[in-house]
Length: 140
Ligand SMILES: *[C@@H]1O[C@H](CO)[C@@H](O)[C@H](O)[C@H]1NC(C)=O
Ligand SMILES: *[C@@H]1O[C@H](CO)[C@@H](O)[C@H](O)[C@H]1NC(C)=O
Ligand SMILES: [Cu+2]
Image (tube, rainbow, N blue to C red):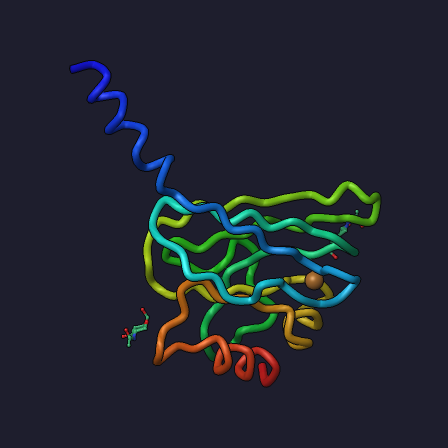
């Protein structure tokens, strides 16, 4: 009985996936990979590998860049600025709480990183694609 309860309690952590996203790899203005398809309970760990960036949700279209402090919701998020200028490779982990599309970018330089394409998407779909979001960011 108790072992069955324990087993059932462990299932979510056994099945949850952990995705790793590099932020600013090779000193680029990039999130790698730029798209993540994740389920509720999965985690996404962003690791800043250069400069000073943020991981912040924003709108799909319109005023995409820069993302606002705190991010755009519902279920949005904002890492705040994470600096690797000291080589510390700071991380930010987000736990997925819904399967709707979430679009994000870096807030740095008043949106210049975002407009340069420093963007990502979690669970984009056929009407809200990452390619269209990237085009919206560059034009914003
Ligand atoms: C990171 O960037 C933000 C925004 O430009 C700035 O306020 C902060 O001081 C920077 N951090 C470091 C360690 O340079
Ligand atoms: C894609 O996501 C948006 C935002 O949640 C939603 O309005 C739209 O219906 C979705 N498209 C498809 C094909 O599921
Ligand atoms: Cu940046």
